[in-house]
Image 1 (cartoon, rainbow, N blue to C red):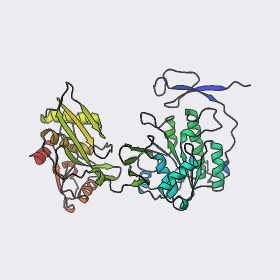
Image 2: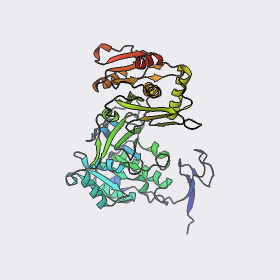
Image 3: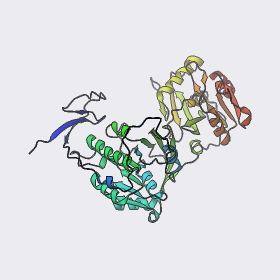
Image 4: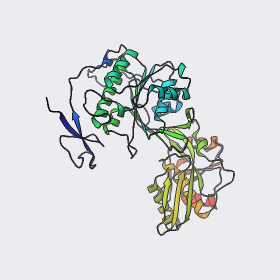
Amino acid sequence: MAKAKTTYFCQNCGYESPKWLGKCPSCNEWNTFVEEVIEKQVFRAPDWRTVPSAVKRSSKAAAIHEIVQTEENRRATPDSELNRVLGGGIVPGSLVLIGGEPGIGKSTLMLQLALNMPNAKTLYISGEESEQQLKMRAERLVQASKANCYILTETATQNIFKQIASLEPHLVIIDSIQTLHSAQIDSAPGSVSQVRECTAELLRFAKETNIPVFIIGHITKDGAIAGPKVLEHMVDTVLQFEGDRHHVYRMLRAVKNRFGSASELGIYEMQGTGLREVSNPSEIMLSQREESMSGIAIAVLLEGLRPMLIEVQALVSTSAYGTPQRSSTGFDTRRMNMLLAVLEKRFGFRLSAQDVFLNIAGGIRVEDPAIDLAVIVALISSQQDISVRATVAFAGEVGLSGEIRAVNRIEQRIAEAEKLGFETIYISRYNTKGLDVSKYGIQIKPVAKVEEVFQAVFG
């Protein structure tokens, strides 16, 4: 009997080594190597190569000026939020990876997509739930009897490709990649080698048959997609499904997209009947308060091409302990500390001995620097206990010297604030170049320094 061949894989990045190593030379992580049995069999062409609708790609080299560029024939879905994040719809032959925390709604989102695709035959492959469980969930979401959706509970890739060859679907959904296993690799499902091999087989299938494939992936405790990092490099699009399970709102964010922008954001509301699209996120991000309160400012941010208004909440109080606390939810704590240093150094506000808490309403996490101006206004409003009028919005980046820097797409930000009924918006003076102020019904106040904002808002 031949001796089984074993090798060691890094569970973090997928680096392969013939012997165990304490530290991975690729990603510098410690104690990540695991032993796996590798038995490469003689490769046989999978059954999906016999699919009649397969589109064989030519491997002949062609000069770049001879290549004829054709418009991508995307398949639009009934989900407008998913269309926005994907860049306009599903690209034929694309491989899309969607990750998220357990219970966040990944399977619900994909099952809704499979049940609601118009004029398309979909195949939902599950290695985690039974057919009865999926049937119960489908009945809660839509009228499942009218959907052209097929369910397959299978984990072996060879059997999956046989079913695909006989069914010939227009869309394939895998739930999840960590449950699949290939006969080409003799190791447990979910291991680094199995995840990589199964993804490679699905990638070859998608490119040669022009059938789009969606893959659901688990994440680690650090929030990264489980498996080797090469998994994210192999696929065409990586989507991250975010949100707090204690809140009803979910965010679908594009981390990587070869067919569109990688900064788009889709927002959903989790209900008993499934995920509902939120077409106007500004209304849910703004709290309904009847009276003015200190420590609250409205910021106009941009996620991809979508402008939205969010509420920034700040609380500055006297520290009861020796070391003041610094805490932020939905905003980078290091950037908050930088803004606090600017306020103390440039404007004389004594914040070093006070507790500072910052929160972005709605559970969303923002990275747009245009929120800086609203953050410092909310901080000073809380410290001085002076409220800011609810009809005032802010859009500007704050520099280390206290200047207000210009932000991109200022016209869209102003139009969004005007649409929601705001009366005044503060922007950078450097954003007014080429800006036609007369076409807006909102009062635009250009400012160059933070002192000008403080004088106009707080007097």
